[in-house]
Image 1 (cartoon, rainbow, N blue to C red):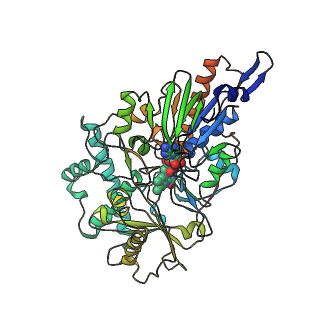
Image 2 (spheres, rainbow, N blue to C red):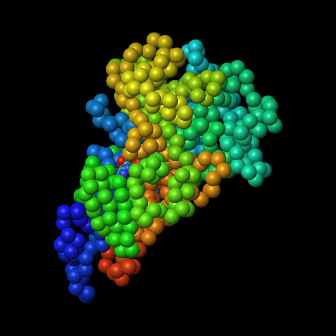
Image 3 (tube, helix red, strand yellow):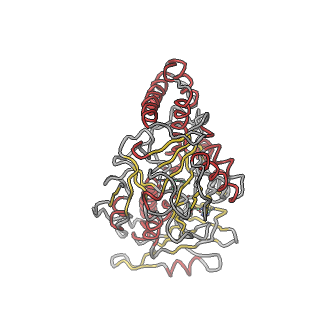
Length: 489
Ligand SMILES: Cc1cc2nc3c(=O)[nH]c(=O)nc-3n(C[C@H](O)[C@H](O)[C@H](O)COP(=O)(O)OP(=O)(O)OC[C@H]3O[C@@H](n4cnc5c(N)ncnc54)[C@H](O)[C@@H]3O)c2cc1C
């Protein structure tokens, strides 16, 4: 592996290691493109298997869609913040347990609101009147019935349709599920939370592929100290080049040449591409020869949704002591919700989380205007709210190194896109949340794909060299079982 200024043979010699039986052998080399959880996990695993690894990351930080910001003097996540599936089976549990990172559980299993249950919620209408809890619970049951009916429609119809269309059919068939007045607004709010889970509006989500992901048991837990310690631990001791945005990947039979923005090139036996689906869609990276048609189709056919976070810091807490505040409205677009981080972390923080079209529209605003928009929503429900003293705004939809928050299935596309995105092309391997068949759109899913790509890569490179026994199998995190630290107040 080398930069363009040094010759192949010089560096190859430098990378030699000794094998007592066969004499010196060169360490296989790999370039990992992208330093999110998938890329870092892959690099860690191959480094530990004695591969020469260079990780090229476009940004001046690691983590990608894990972005723990410390500018307030304590950790706040602008990207992922929940561990979905607080259980031993979660691929990240051994590492999180070993690091002693505390989790704050916001829902038990099978919550109708995915990552939250209704135990600690306060919903308000636009006039600031709190919705009676009995109504919230009653509409929650209706929402569950709507989901069940939509599931039946999926089985009945051979053709695909949007989830929104399926809901319309449900309401035609079961008019009693259609709500009026305040109950209608609460139902819209439930739908809005469902859209938030997919980071997309119901009028784009495929009914056929909707909600098929595997949910691990144990409910959902907020990473109280932020997700970054996980990245930092995996990245320790790796050769990481920040500020290296890859523009070209040239594939030869037994060699990969990777070029970054300033023209520097790196050569290795193989590469693992772990950039986001949005970046692959934008053709930021030119592949030579071009990727096969089936791979290109998978890249264009899988959807990428947008969810953002607007973090508002206040001098002191003036809101109810609940985990979530919601604003119900006539349409899902007008509904909103705030995560109360004070419950989990003790800091006076509310996180506004728009998704889908609303998130895209808010990205057109300046940071100040976006924070003001979020604050205006809050004022609707708490008219005496004091002004925030600080704010942070994420822009995952337009950020050139992400171009979307996470993947989801759009209507009328094949159902095997995640698998197609994962399949290697010779010595180029693919990792990242959009290559996860079991847990797409999640941190643990992305992590698992990094480990899997590393193992595929190790097998392929070493088989070619006939040196399969020399290098250790890939195991990114030792399976030590330290219990997770879980709380709920
Ligand atoms: C707002 C938001 C909230 C979320 N909430 C949760 C949650 O609570 N729980 C959960 O499990 N998941 C959540 N997710 C999803 C989760 O963050 C992702 O699934 C996961 O972090 C993706 O990891 P990755 O390694 O696949 O991609 P990324 O983290 O995006 O990593 C890809 C890396 O590639 C780099 N890159 C891009 N282009 C290039 C290039 N040309 N050259 C070199 N490097 C490049 C990027 O800078 C980035 O570092 C959330 C995501 C968002 C946006």
